[in-house]
Length: 406
Image (cartoon, rainbow, N blue to C red):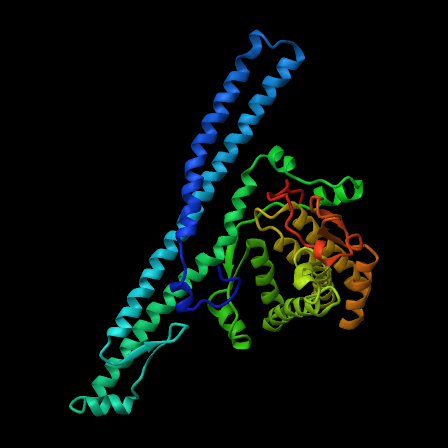
């Protein structure tokens, strides 16, 4: 819902949770029906041995049992998705109710209070005005007003923080899809006919990791001292470990440099010839612009922190469960090319690195997702094979993850 934008009181009060609840209702209703149909179909096939004999009959019965296993596993995924969405919705609902109470108490306060978008509660009257209107106990009135401001500010901000954590954890919902069976995952994959592209697709897949929200506490305060608008992010546990180790071994400056490099790669991708000026920025999502961002990012990380850290972190970054297989393969492959560029050119300037990444895209050495024609299914391909930016970065048909290899 927030896409790393700081949460505000008006924002969360404007959320409509009905659509998420409707998704839960649909998942809950269709699951039992699918399960009953799968069990019934498998049972009928299993009883066919009296009239469907030989190798064909045995193959059909084996396939029937396998299909039932796949279907029941998929039904379990539906139930798990419903449970995760429900838990997050419940958190949203409880915390939004707290914000509504805080807003009502602020409006009803005798101290003429109001709240800002970030939850800070202030008074429209200065302390001098408060003292003047409460002349018989001015100091007590000022103290009471400021105490109420602090209490209400805490109510707003604690609720916003709890919503922020739950909102960041939405990324973990897709991880449930990892519980689909391998045959279902492969059956939905759009595998290229090019043997090398097929190899890249199937081999550049990683196993999922636990999701966390980081940073918090002193580390968050440290980052916000430099970037006040920084928002804690949902990330894999292995990402968090890599950044925690970076902070412990190289200090706060290294962590700040890390986030600067990430911003620099994002900005460079937008400003490149593959960026926002093409097809309204479409190429920045799984197209040439996206390939540029990942490759340049890894080149910069390698130059600043070394190839080992760059590989550790950027691979951990892809361990978000439920990622589409083509997208995961594209990012992991392009990351590796970026590290090669960074390691081979340790003294190169940012401009020189950007030129090398651009050349790699033009030479077809990177991977993008796109369509060769409007009728074709989107799939991974070489970075110079889809010249029309409007055909790049389209959503892929493979909406489920592929089996992890790393």
